[in-house]
Length: 69
Image (tube, rainbow, N blue to C red):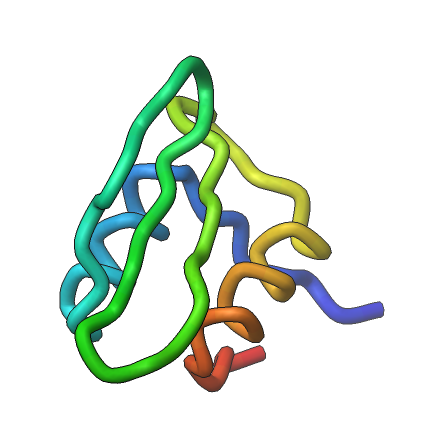
């Protein structure tokens, strides 16, 4: 069985910011990020210690970032 690396919301935000995403809006427990070139937005639950691996996969997919497994 594979062990999947767990990510905190802070780590996810750091990765997204390194890839050019910026926080556009933050209300309640979610941050919304936009990219100057890529269309759409990415929503990250924040602050959370460990995000579910499916949530992490979905965030990376929305952002167009390949996830190392």
